[in-house]
Image 1 (tube, helix red, strand yellow):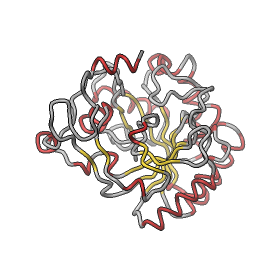
Image 2 (tube, helix red, strand yellow):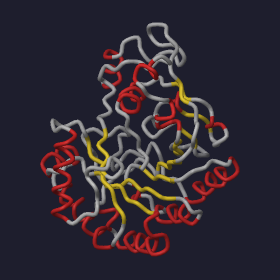
Image 3 (cartoon, helix red, strand yellow):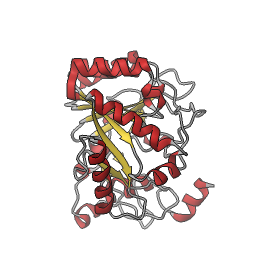
Image 4 (cartoon, one colour):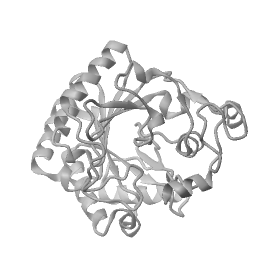
Length: 317
């Protein structure tokens, strides 16, 4: 039904990679300054959200667990290609469901990268072995390790509406452990609610002050408010003329600075995608190697317009 609704809302749009529905040249983005390489650790998750763009759940293994050896293969390619990366990001699913998550983060940290792990801070992160691993990584690498916590709203009833009853309290429990352990954390919320940006940030600021969390609610890098990714919403196509009209540059879009590695169920090898938001769209699969993934990306999807160009959002820190 979602695919049908999306096709109806954007009838005639996003069909030709190079030309928009009204015959204009579609905008494209070059990998101009690679800063972040993402690894999807697998789509399995301990919860199932009401609206998860990647459809993570306790049963969805469409993207299987990636391994430390596979991560290191791509880190070797980064060196060989001379990519000036700053950050290695891990997303899921819930990354701490992957039994090699600590080892993969350690491999990236040992090479001098900053590491960002996206987590709901619930039971998978709170296992004793995982907590011990996080403490060891922090002791060796300090603030180069950051955990971004998915806290959809500062009010528990709104957060739980998305993630299930009791999830807010479990996430806060994990955040309190991170606080007490001295691990660096940031927060990712959603801007889909009725609150304005200022109201949302004020609400998060009050929560952080009350809990003693060292997170700046006014800093978009520490408290990220993501626009909702609804493929059924009608959005404009981005043409080459839009950059000047909007006062934006292709360098500002996420695919100018990042790529994501995934491993599909049944595949012999991982593959590289244009971005983190489109794991199931074949058009945005660039090849198995970073060399293949250096080609330009055509902005031929509603997410390209709403989330990245018009929303100005980025999954990176």
